[in-house]
Length: 448
Image 1 (cartoon, rainbow, N blue to C red):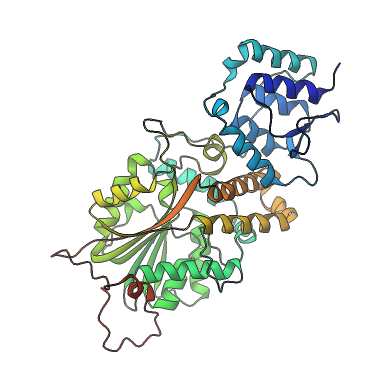
Image 2: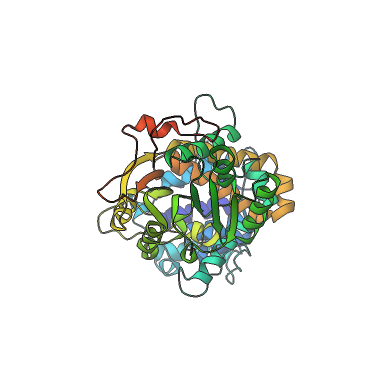
């Protein structure tokens, strides 16, 4: 019998109609595929079985998360992800939507015969336990809580290991004088505060407040009183601890609360950072309108949100099966133009849109480096499967930002006051200057 890797690679290339971008090592030690390509390892027959039952991205993800598919020692994960990303964009692959039924054609039957000869055919393997199992109506309050818990309630110690001391789980802002991830995250928090025109005495709402880092920065540096809401129990618990440790409990309140249930507006400013991706297209106008109603006339909204490319006209949006199943259940990305249109439909005047795409790529590479440097501890905290999920999704996302397959934008919008007044300074430089809490305002005109 020919070597397993040679048989499998040949059968897969026949089914796909293109040469594989990876070199493959099978469980018998045989190797096949293009010389010099990144080397991946099929550790057992179950890796092939997963791909037969679920051809495509989800089958690959299940094989990787479970450890049935792995990287050879010395193989760079970014090289593998880049090769795969370019491969799936080939015209003949991009238009291919493989499913189990495709295995009934001539090339599929050849792959099945190879699976039989190599002992790889069998019952469908159970998906790894890290795979989400969502139930109920999409974007109902209960289902959203379950989706958020799946991703965010995996342990604050794990997140601290990946994110670093800043505990900020969103795109950093890499200024020329920044020396570290912590510097870049502090710069991002300050950029948001300056765009919002925060000053002492203002009331801030942070929707999806995470572990409270923006609340702490805004209250400590800009003198605001603040309310943060999240539906992650672990985030809220740690955010409250951090607020108390900073001596800011008299000015910062952290609530375990859905954005649809906030009763006590108005607020002078609202921030929403990395939260709107969880809202969903069907709920987005409700989300935007709700924030509009919570904002005082003349107040500002800073909406920081990942965006997808619009795609071909008429082509439906299909989320990544891996991201939907393992990372962000029910998460949805929209083009930035759609986001701007919906914010304006809700009543906002959009005043500024800034892309931070390259900044997020740098941020994700830092998170991956943190995870890899602390791999043993990460596995102890959350298990090998979940650690592999985070490593795969963050590396893939870094490349997606670098190659302009997704983007990230800060949208600054205003609820104009009667007469169309925005209460913004005359120039962009002025409203970006900001007014920290320790600044003597003197006779300077109000920015509100």
